[in-house]
Length: 493
Ligand code: SAM
Image (cartoon, rainbow, N blue to C red; front, side):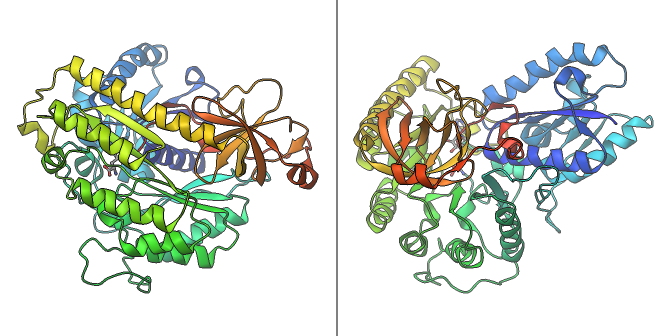
């Protein structure tokens, strides 16, 4: 049986696409190789949101040319956003590549590999499925008794925004939505198999509309509001139809669609955790306008404030770009003041990078690289201080943690033996000490917070949680969450 290996660059959407490539290849008779060296087929699932990510692909392909030369029948596949962006050009530029496959063409991958195996020429397939959008579904757990505690479920793909810095509309195409019946069925199947938390995925996830018109209007939704969508109605349907789901998250929303109906859903649905990632990009109205974000700073503040008032204790995190063309010291100061005003408890910050096919290419990239670096460092300083104060304030409190795995498996390298870790309802990472003899995987447990680390919390089970926990049994491990795939550069968004 041919063996494959997948390396993932980029965002959660790419992680999810890689999971589906695993499914598609396994169904076609391929088995996963222990390492790239053992693989017959190597897939690089790429990101092109920032230039650096694209450069990583190019250096990786350069490195793999040697891997290919070692055996004539080895196949190198480039998938994801760079594949979509460059198409055939990649085949011409980098002779080591055999197959280029866009995000919408993943189901065709085994066929393309088959053609190659019988002497076909290198090929690029990068066609959007505009007429009949396909949403690949996770294959049900088979060989192991438990599903991973957390899973992603796609609700929409593509993007109809035209943010001037962003390549996504070009690499992912226009918005296409998945019927709510299908979404609910996938979540119900995951929960039946043991998944506790689902993250709904989409480029602007909260612009969701049911393509079959199967959702009733959500409470608080206004027919006259152009920013209204059916996302709140979808959340309500999932909450009602899948009562066993412990947590329902979503990423990435757009502030425009943070409408009263979504705020009300947060206030009323216990399954929605008290944390939302809401990309803002800048705190300066001048820059927001040039970024074509279609909201003002005041609108962002008012909308997020309504959310926090409706759900006491809810925290917000965000994405920010520094050094966008024309960004002055005053514009950047406005961004810092917004970070303080909203009090973000997490932040992904990026230096602006010019991307092909984006409207901002018409603007000069006039903020020097050094200035971008200084601003980014200043931004992180501000956000780290906010996070440190927040985490310290939690010491001594009791929090509910969904246990996602053992620290070592999750790459945290917890001190001493089997240390469990998971996330609180507000998405803080919590490491649980002294519970190695217990089986906590997938459990929602009460913990006392004992210490604040730089980016996480240290915790202990409460007496009641310890008394209720199961002892650990050998052989009952979860099917490896696909989040343990090699992710080269996972970033927010
Ligand atoms: N849905 C998100 C939104 O509302 O904007 C976009 C997700 S994007 C894949 C992840 C993040 O990458 C963006 O939020 C933005 O901060 C950053 N980003 C996108 N294009 C960029 C560029 N040209 N330069 C620097 N950062 C960029």
